[in-house]
Length: 500
Image 1 (cartoon, helix red, strand yellow):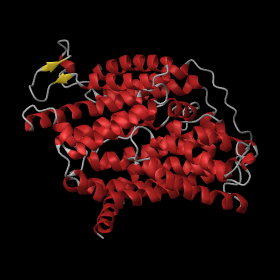
Image 2 (cartoon, rainbow, N blue to C red):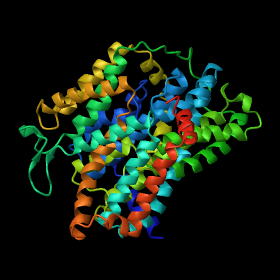
Image 3 (cartoon, one colour):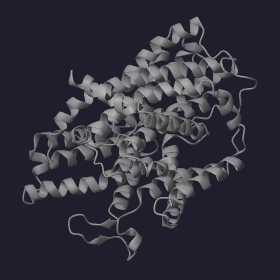
Image 4 (cartoon, helix red, strand yellow):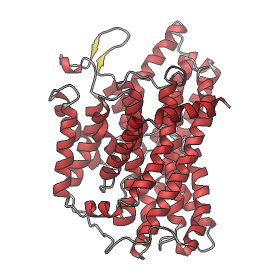
């Protein structure tokens, strides 16, 4: 099959010494920062994004993907050892992972998480390689009206699946769309919402926005907290599951991988949703459900596999349709645009080396995670023992150096500081800023496709309803929004995200 040959070519790109070193660096840095409680993949990528500016596009995305995997694994390490999830997908891992650690099986729990994530990542990589070409061919038949409706569906799904209240998520989406309007109108060439500032002519800087909302906002929010770190005492031994634990874990890995691979395609947070769903399924299928919450290996294997598979399959709509399914994928789209690459179906033809090299690097990155992280557990434990008063100032200085390096100017730092205060305000109000980032990325693209559709239809707005595919996508969006407003589904949604 063609995709196998393309994947082989992707490995030729990914296994060069330069790209392997960058993938290794991304995995290591991502884990080192992601292991800090409260610092998840989104914040980690925001902090380290400036490091990729001087790299070639393929190498930059390979490094960013490595940072993503590393930060996710770091979140699992924190959840198991400290009972503090590094990101939302690791919330469920805390339940049985930390219980296993307290029972003296911390090494086994970490190994189950690593091996389950590696298997899920392998399946996810094969899924991207096999499924993306077909979806890309379908996407080439999309017209401007269809793309506009697809992005409306993506934003509605992001509202539905975002943690917190629906009204808050809707407000975040609208705020992101408005921020995306700042700068020069691509059609008329006039300045919009710049208030006479030359710095805003090209729009708000994506890196400053992302780093301010997520990195600076989280630093401000966490700096004043005193976390009760219930650290596992003593050395972490027995880094391999015993026969009974392995026998219980592998069916959960298979089911979690299958569920995560499907739910990860959903815009808005399918990876997080799949970790909750897989844990519930394993508990219902178990012959001894009373063990869950007390250190059941399946309670670690299922959510970790589902979370990783969902994170991998989230690349499919991002790469083939240009539709970010979560905040991290929005960050990846922003990184691609920084390197003048427009995500979408043409990426596979115009930038084939980049696409297949990135896909191949995903498997390499997941393998590197297993190889380097299990021996480094002792280092992560020591890192977790450092006081917050030492950690966050260091991250703050590192972030500001990265911002300054964008154009050797203090403007991005000032902009990021302003968005940091805004991110802190959102944190205090219980508003999740990830939908804002989706709105910021998709808003300008929606505007462009809407204008193209109206120009082709000579101003006839019914074009969005007369095109069959566009009508189907808009109908799905309306049904999704109406269904989630029903009392039963809204209550279930609140139950799912209550721990988030």
